[in-house]
Length: 312
Image 1 (cartoon, rainbow, N blue to C red):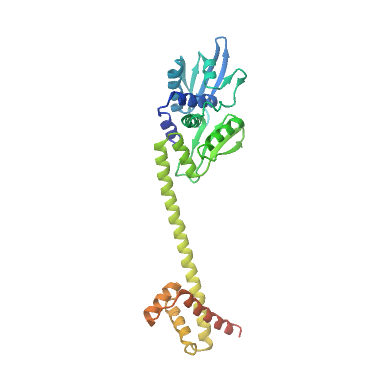
Image 2 (tube, rainbow, N blue to C red; image 1 turned 90 degrees about the vertical axis):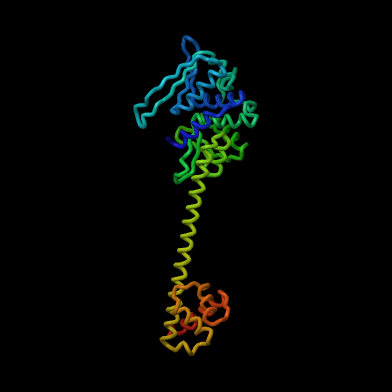
């Protein structure tokens, strides 16, 4: 079972107020249904590949409108061969569409009025319905975080984006082939969206995976950083040993100032030690404290002396 299916299953079980039922149904019917005109009048046909979405619509339709309906299952014969759940509402279609603000005296609407989603709970319900209708979200274990809703039109996509913005969800829009898609990429905003639509269990699963993934990424970055620093230290130590060897080729170290002799001696004995480690060894051996910059300065002086002999 996919993570998207888990999310839809959870939000399809949420209890709603009557006003929220209207908002959620409006989104689902707007995005999943089509109208049919027959000799018996107008009927609504809703299609969905998600069984929980179909059950949710059937339950709310019977509860809110006491309609007679027909639920059938079709089998796709291509690609994934998923089931398609078809719900037909054969009576009171016009009244239902008017109540859900999908249709008015001017015809079909691109989106409902702001009055329907004026209350925060109704706005959340509408977004939940939109996700039930055509939403998807990547598993939190995948490489990229991504949540999207395929809208009916660009106007409807704009409506969804404004609705999401009310909850500090900065959704973006993209035209993908013939689809108008509203999407979120930031992992924390996807978490906020799941919280917004009432998918608490899915939110906990998403956050747990996200925290583990971010923790492992942090460890990897830390390991890489430590490895880079270690390689840098080894490389610097190798160059300093070469400088000391150049000096020893042309003169004895004993002819150098005592501070430089001490630094050269420590570097020869500890070729892969960092500056901090050399400072600790200096204190251990000579009983004096030297700063990291002091040790760096002495090794730099050895480099200057070696450079003189390299020109010879």
